[in-house]
Image (cartoon, rainbow, N blue to C red; front, side, top):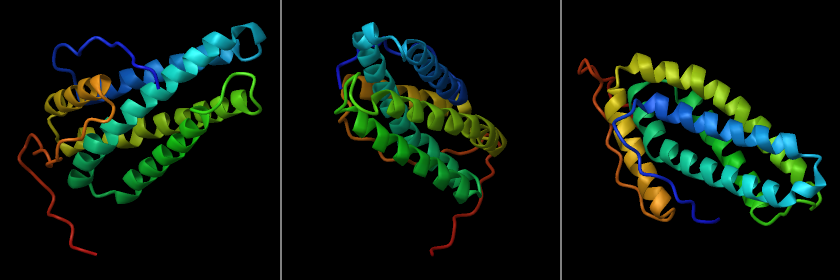
Length: 184
């Protein structure tokens, strides 16, 4: 994927606001692609859009999988919800991998982008309802978590291969913490 010059994040941002802003950016890119879908003279712009979509989804998925999901998993008692989100990310990675070797005009290029967009729209809807609600109810310090997500996003925008820092569960505001899960 190409290198994307992005400005560094500024002031602290609520974790859910940061993730929602990423969601809105990706949905906007998919909408622009959809407007160009049948325009055979727009292949170059379609290629750029798909490159941007894949890049944004990759970075976003990485910060969720490395930080957001593990923190939530330590604080909420809903492994199924987080497992499903992880499987949805795996499906997106598969489609992104297919798009990495495709070009506008190839068989199934537009269909692959459309399916990725539909799957991500469904994922975003579930995430912004169930997972965001669970995060709010957990008592987690969303500004602190947002700073961690933002810092990691900045690292990934500099170098997508930079290794993640170890994740430690964050303490909820009220100091309450659910007991550790027993081993399987």
